[in-house]
Image (cartoon, rainbow, N blue to C red; front, side):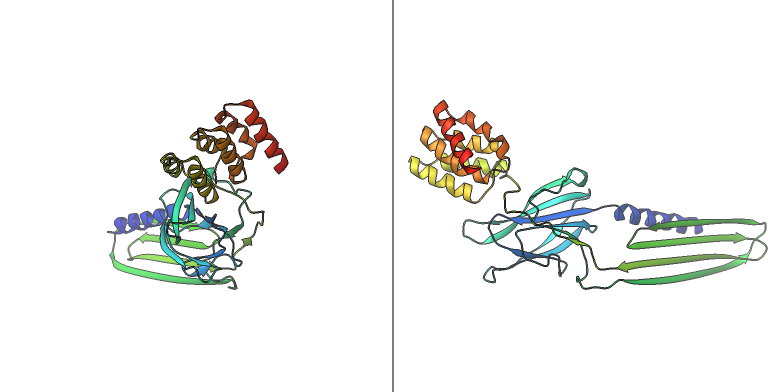
Length: 307
């Protein structure tokens, strides 16, 4: 019976330790020019409204998220975030649907060790489960259980001690077993320490810009929509509408430009997409979409004038 209790205790401690090792970052951003506050489990994470918030050091597997827009005419967005088993950085995007209402959609998931802080992060916030004016406090709870049994022959002694802890959580378990010609006594002492402190907040303010390119699936659907139209002016108009609401990398711009037949249409779209490209240093790849060197030179002149 005692062995089962010890094994159960150790298994519980091991599971706590493994779970405590998991960390998550959550990024919420929008290209819709709508500033917002991000709340997790009812606690506001960023003090000033912005279009891009990154919350670090999350360690639970689900959170109630609420997006409150600075524009009071916009309805708040609410949903439950279910985080993966692996430590990850999860990105959510606030986008506008066809009817004009805003929705929150998952954009990407990458292992935490592969994630990097992009220059275009508007706000980086260390997660806090309590309001930001909280003060540091520590609560310690100690429980001692004593079990006495009958007399045992012989003389045996042993102990098991397990300690798990970090800056915000501590757990100590000590099990002492002493068998002699006296009553058997098992003493279990459990100490749980929780610390709540005012969180560290780091803000990185940078100029507005694109952070993520459009998903390839969305780009393919956009190309199909453009290609389904007969008139060149209509196709260009739809392309510009898509560019206005998304960001691209240079390869995606090249693919978008390539669906146009006329050289002047290709050039117009390439110029229009330049400011919505996240890797402008690779914009030379767009040249492959053109048929004439003269068009490439005109695009290069346009880009030089923008710098």
